[in-house]
Image (cartoon, rainbow, N blue to C red):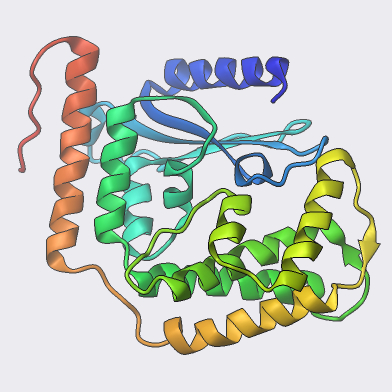
Length: 276
């Protein structure tokens, strides 16, 4: 992590709180630097969850649920309102779960991250999370490797990660949230030895090389991707899993509690949001 780049990110987060008047209970690094397969020229992908002040919840003019900035140089930053993050989680979008498990934290409150992750473990279903990674992985496979020609080798990781996550889920029928850190994920999903060697060689090159170059998808990788996606289609492509009414109610209670606590900690006094 470059110190100057981290300082720029910190300044940007200060700007967000000042200009938008929001709380930032979580700001993390996503992308390859957090996944554990960065290269010397990898971008910085700052992601954050923001929460608006109570006054902004009692207006007929709802504010945007995203704050985003155009990518500049190697910095990409954007974030979601807590309500948007919760809604997507209940639909099976695993992105917020990855944010909550990022090993690179720029700022935030531990109680928020721990509480949100605990809720996510309870609310997320294997069916919805599995479907998320299946669709993500198949899209990467189709877009980057569909025609069998030479492709940028660094793109391999973007298809391998969801495939390995699906394998991890298949091996743990009672779990729904896999490791975000790719080396840990690969170790825990017990990949075939030939694939393990291929991935280790790719990662060692990516760590020190700005450009891995282009080449056809290695057969051992192609076989792994196709096999895991096929197995996942059987397990996760069925009926759409929907959050129960109780889970939706719990999400509402969690949201309300976070807004109240952030407001209380900011102003130093008790604030309670009551249903209309």
